[in-house]
Length: 395
Image (cartoon, helix red, strand yellow):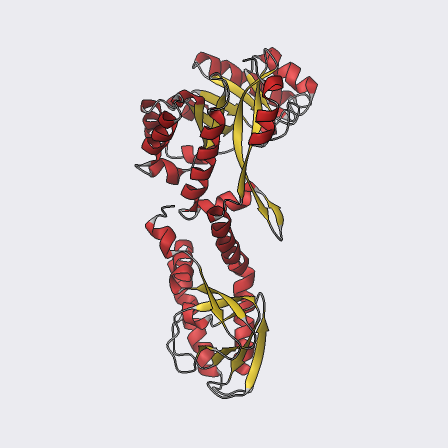
């Protein structure tokens, strides 16, 4: 797989040490911090044999190196066979400066003042600081660093799964297509919600890798289904800003003899804040032959005026409106308005989050074209879809 330049810079590295092997010595220039994945590490008073602290799996040490890059005042030695996750300075500074450059400067000043106050001996004061700073860092993002590393591993080993939720034609009650959804089954944390790990992936070039997996699987599935069936896939700003994104998709579709219109690209309302940019994205997609969907409409930044300015092909009504369409007159009125506007603009409509027959019947009466939700079925694996092909489609 090809990673973006920033993705390579942000990559984590695992290192391994044997019992008794030094990880770093006192007096060395700091250039990285470590998280213990397995084993135990002893912190020594410089290079003396005096152990001032013993750290075990999940703990952080050497963190001064990524914050102020000063000379190390202690040494670290593997007590057992040790596996360490290395954190380089860029991984900290990138995140600090993305938040606010002044935060980085402030942390550096505070750490230097703390160092000046601490005696350079083995009385435990330095170990207390290590423990305190580790605690602060862990609370503010250590788990995120670990999760990012594990997500990279999951992507490379294809542990991020892709499932497909049916989209049903309300007029015929037959499956017309699917939405591709990503799932990450973490070995310890269980299923991690797409909102959490996709958000993490979008902060780096990992979203390109996740997207590549999803598109490959969707194209593979489309090649085995009737030509009338489509698949919707969410795309990010990073993907659409890549000059290779659409050409690569077209090459993959051409290799399988699949029409581009069968792969519909969904963009969320948060990507519509910049109307000019969003319009350019949609135009490029149309020129390549793709249909574009406005996802989660009605919950974010966009309004009716923005919808008028963006040439979407499909409007997906967010489940927030659908779930209370029977109980709140205002939501029913809003859905009616969305249907009326979409029809006038030549858009098709999809209602998300349909869970009851009564919701389905009302939405069908209002003129919604497609429904998606547990009422029609949960997300399915490729093998399940192919096994039920005869029941799902009219070939």
